[in-house]
Image (tube, rainbow, N blue to C red):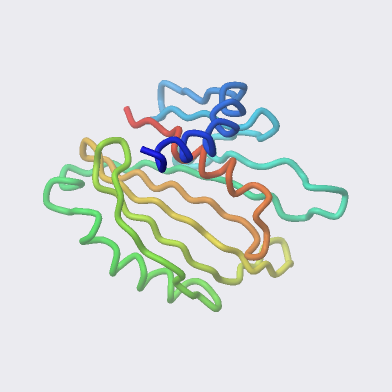
Length: 174
């Protein structure tokens, strides 16, 4: 009981802040979400949605972001499960990302479905600049759709971690 009370007290500031957040909903997109009022949302290629943080000062040349993609296939979640895809996802990441390093892997419930979380680091080249990033990626099959949500931040930055986590938790499949 004491743990539940402590958890509620810890989450109150996040829940209060999230009440002022913007709502994302687009009839052509298979989810809704809430995002911080100072972040920007954009729908890009293949209906991938990006939520991007504001600049953290004049010298900030990297914007943290959460992006969400949805793909459909009749076997998703029926004959293919989240645990089935993780080995090939990890193999693909290791072959495509410079200095790839898996930090953690866990399974949890997201939108009442089995989901997986991968946390990893690597080096990306963006507009001629090299960045070492930490990526938190969630995977979930729901209603023959694969939902992939990705939070990308600089490896040693944590300013937007709580906002990103709250955003990820706000995602509702439809």
